Length: 476
Image (cartoon, rainbow, N blue to C red; front, side, top):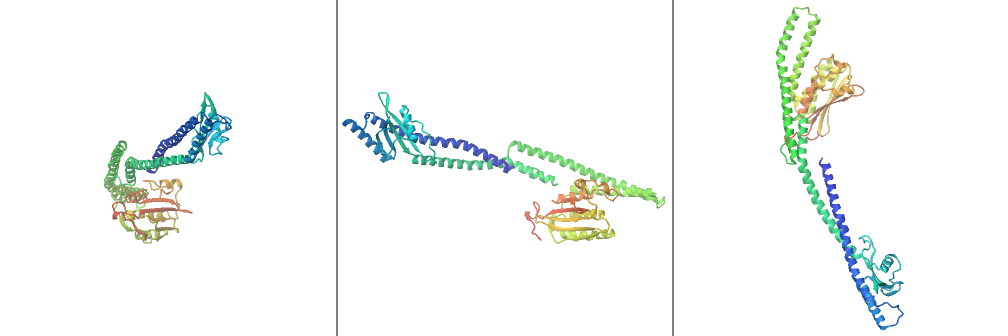
């Protein structure tokens, strides 16, 4: 969630900064150009004042006129030499009154457009904006008016290199400010998202702990918005209620199983006494005896399940290969009696597990595999590790399960309709799963081709929280 919320905040803040920075950059460029335009308008006004009385054609003889023209020409040349700005005063017929340099004439382009606009008695006020990447010039024209008529036009064509440099420097300053503001915004966003999501992370970790069987886990007090703090308190209240309900359920199952065992034992004893009065081959008494023993087994399994879900695992570093080899050896006589070959590939592999819980789980899995495997087939037990997890895979060549049955295997009291006549209570795998989950392990099922079932018992190789300073195991 942090990786999704943080980019969203950064994009929004970047959009805000751009929305502020772009108009500021445009305004800066406009202000720089307007400053140049105003300066050129002042210059053209001064030249227009000098040119007001130089209105005779170039071939007119007259000392005053010639002196004024010479003065104007000298001013324009000095202006061009000092500032590098082309300037000229032109009659309405384009004939130059005075200009510098000599080749500067209003013949085409922006200069011509400004000249014609000034002939209409309009002074240049708003030339098109020049941007830093454009190598264009800035043209300003002003009419020379005498007796209300436009008799000539003053035109200046300014290079824009310095102006574009100032605009670019201003933009760099704005960009630096935007970058600094963006860094501050990112830092603020990191703090904000961390503050907002800290209770969510704690809640997620606690939820995972509870989901994996650590029902005592609770959400610790953390910062964040009041709504999330209230959610954390509500979650703790819910977890307390759920734990209380589960404790009551477990206590009921354990108490019921324990209380029923004595009456059931007495009933079985009376059945045995009754059997002494009946013929040995009486089918009814044999059936009642079998059902009584089955009920006793169910009660024992229920008590084991309640204890498995309630007791804390005794986690330690265990040689999984040695435990698996021991269980293979223990179940080999049962397999031999059924003419099933039980083999084990159990190299030394260490992991964190409760040895009693792991042995019980392997007993249940191997027992099922041998029980459902036909005579003449093979059951294989293989120990392996992938770095973070150690696995014990039990593969049989029995009838296997359908896809629908695979989704239900391991449920309490569930047994396949095809196997109802085989001895069992349907609680063995449930007990095994409860024991494994309490220690951070798992139990999974899949098909084995061409037929059969593959059951995988997994236990972690990394130390659980609070064990062995959190150090994992090295590969063996």
